[in-house]
Image 1 (cartoon, one colour):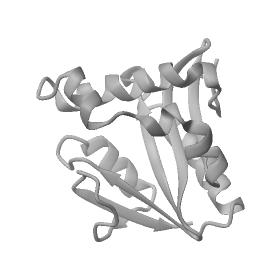
Image 2 (image 1 turned 180 degrees about the vertical axis):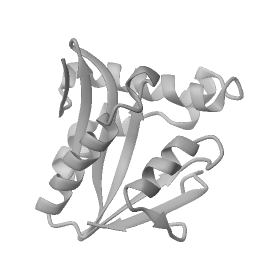
Image 3 (image 1 turned 90 degrees about the vertical axis):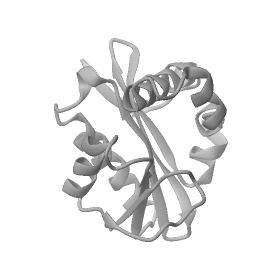
Length: 159
């Protein structure tokens, strides 16, 4: 049975593996595992307690038979603005409504935490067309750059 739960310390490495697997799939041989790890240390996941939970945020994992197969988080940007982060699902778990369920849990948390707007960034619209389509379906719209990440797409939506 698939469950969506707050990440536990023993699941951190599995969560990082999901992010790595999906990222390498998106960039299809254009980036090596070593290069990815140099670009993205995933320190936010390594330090999930301080980066998310202790900072008015939440980090969830999609679990299937005790294995992490998806991730998603909310982190604070400003007092009333949060960011949707690390929404990564292994291929076998996409297209089943699980992303919708996870984002609903994250948005419910964000509303209860007092956030009024949520933002996200995507590295590349063409490479992440499924994420782009999903974000638009959730009500996200394009905005100006709000961070110094290497991403090229920036979106927001009211909560």
